[in-house]
Length: 473
Ligand SMILES: Nc1ncnc2c1ncn2[C@@H]1O[C@H](COP(=O)(O)OP(=O)(O)OP(=O)(O)O)[C@@H](O)[C@H]1O
Image 1 (cartoon, protein in one colour):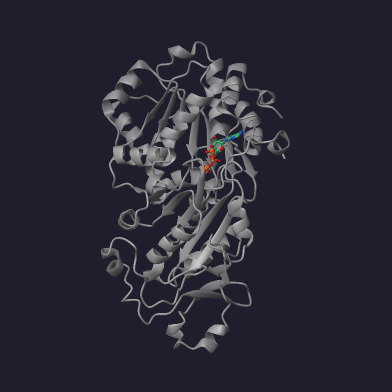
Image 2 (cartoon, helix red, strand yellow):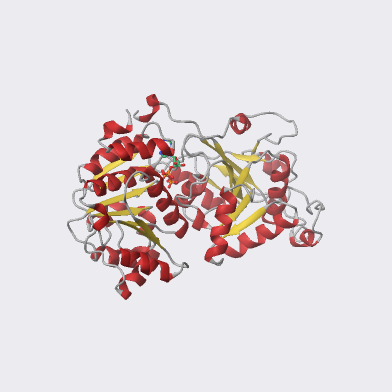
């Protein structure tokens, strides 16, 4: 099915084709006609499947039909996103798809200069993309009026309904006319959303593409058990032995992200950090540099977990297991996008075992624990690192002396749980032999057995143009 058959206007279809898309993805085929009819939507589709165009295209189409578009003083469409980076990315999509239309979009987000935003708002805009905090600032200053908004989008809807955002979002929604169309999109939409959405939507149509909560199948998920003190050593070992093109590493904390970044920089890896303690220009520089290939590795907190679309991320590494299972789905969804393949690696300590179990329950998938090839998880002290002598002592190698490796076992009901480390089971090898043995992944590039994960890695990661036959199945 071509884009034209979705009912989109000619200049818009030309803009889509010029962006390089030849046929709609499944979520686009299902959501666009319903949105064009004016329905409220709750749309859930896996990461990297083109949800942005599924809400941006109907907005552009609607605006184009309005007469005359250049006269709009107040925004006609409002798109709310949880992060600045995502807001800017969506504005980029609006510019791309709408290149043959006369439509003005503006992004307002914290950390950016007010002056230019105020001027643009004064001149008048058609689409406003915003993070909630900065939009509320503008509303307080009366520099923007939402009284003409006809379409409201909550991208990453479940995140927008999180405790941290809910009050701000509710306040914003109350300022938008009730007659609006409201579109909610995310890769993870819980049943609670129906309840929360009840207050802001009218008879919404729910569209679910793919299995709810499941990471996309193009991501090869791997889990390695490792002692806490050895995480930095294992990370370096992986980066040195496995062929990784562009790597996104997630840390649970900002300090952790900085620490990992410093360690990797000392080791000579081209690494940059992104988190909310960095200035806006540092955040922009990091993301742009990562996208442009100036940095091979970006270390991030969960601010980069949602929506960020960087072509060619070959590996996502969860240095820490994410606290919320849905964050796992979003984090690893930064790879394997638009039919590319990718690897998602999670490093798990004994303490993090229960969190991994929650992820398994949430995604309904058991993640087979593996041992990293040629890595001694029992080593008393980490090997001496080639550069940066200070890092040796910081690895905590000495403190780790005498502690065994971590592992999990699965009971007869199939539940997985944290298992005691080997030495904390008095170093009793017999006891350990009862535990399900982590599988050796044999995925280093320096020889060894090839498993399916390795075969996956060797697949081309370049984005393939979608085939007509794939778009509407
Ligand atoms: N019809 C299409 N044909 C080819 N590529 C597409 C198509 N639609 C979108 N894409 C590309 O697919 C990638 C993922 O799209 P997008 O960022 O909208 O995904 P998403 O579903 O919103 O992901 P996430 O859940 O992570 O936010 C982007 O690089 C986008 O340019």
